[in-house]
Image 1 (cartoon, rainbow, N blue to C red):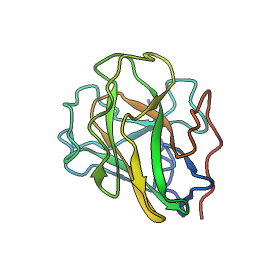
Image 2: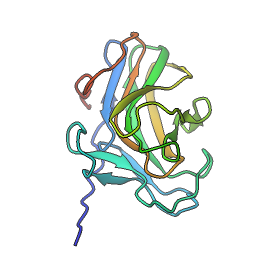
Image 3: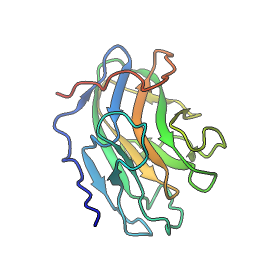
Length: 178
């Protein structure tokens, strides 16, 4: 028998500081199926070792068709930004092969660039991936959207930074919440 316990939704917005915010993927504010063609949302898991903190989030079913930005299940993260500017999105992710290597990301319900990742680098290990499109963020409350594209794409941590830092290893500590 397998019992999966999803962590509770977060409390308070993550606080950007010094041009950077760091979030554990499992510390989402909402996890919504939306119009996903598989009718599933993200799942909390701990099976693949090497993650940071409590676990990671991923689309669990291996029988999922790819989703689009418009219909994909999503986890959202509320962030308070005090430093406006151009930010880079980093994901600490794990994928097994080129059939499991992409997702969608956005802010306030608007996709940032096209598919995120979809590269053939870092299979079968936790790997930092830099999204190839930057995003302009104003000061204030922003909702970060992590949406499913392919099955099995595991996300451990999210770093949104404008200071040019390239995360490595586990990355910086998670940002506080208000």
